[in-house]
Image 1: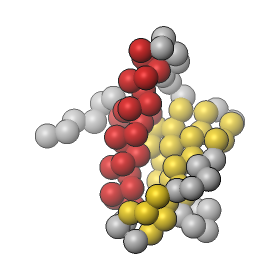
Image 2 (image 1 turned 60 degrees about the vertical axis):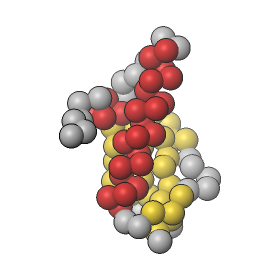
Image 3 (image 1 turned 180 degrees about the horizontal axis):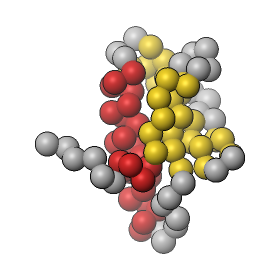
Length: 80
């Protein structure tokens, strides 16, 4: 298992995930990031908040960014 951190990027601000979570690989971590982004977006829509400009920066234990999930992009993904 690999520990990934789901930091939230909002413009030039970065909100760090202090705990992270363990996943088999970057693909399963990305799938969770997509699910989490959709959940966060649904709450923002319900609260009348801005839903553009945020993203997850997935990093590994060394701090290297291994993937980026833009929140606006998860609205367009088709789950078949």
